[in-house]
Image (cartoon, rainbow, N blue to C red; front, top):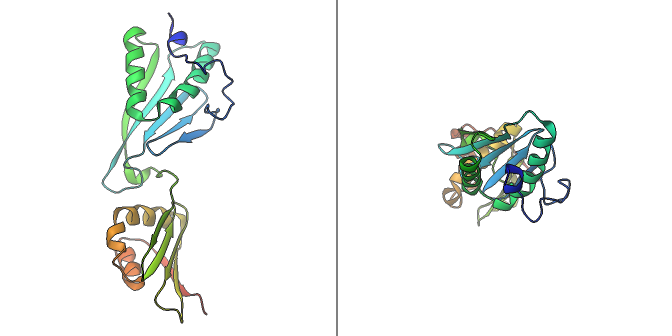
Length: 204
């Protein structure tokens, strides 16, 4: 058996442009891992600590150790189906490690660690609603609304995309505390965390 056969599965013969395979230049993710396919390599990022300060995300870089482009292309197409099917970094690492036992030197696997705050979290919308306020946040957009002051209807948004990312990470880490805050307390807490918010009244 060669490496190509060892990495095949029931879907291996299916064209890699189909939805369940990662196309060239595309990114696939679930709640646990993000996989990006480059021309001749894959980047696999663990997402458990993504977007969080003080956390770390393990990273794998995978490529076929061959100068033959057709060999590399076939391997990439097969792995484009196999990696999403495995679904988490530990399973992917285990598969590659097992293959390297039988086929030493035929796959390049580089392991590293990234800061969680530098990795975009999985695409999940943070939604917090209490008697005092409502918060909707993603890594690209933030809206905070006061639910108590119905006369002025205070609102807050981030000033820059980098602030949205910081707010998302901060709010994800402090969701329990935010549920006990007033609108003004949240604005002050975000400022203390280095996040710039623009505040205005919707009734103006």
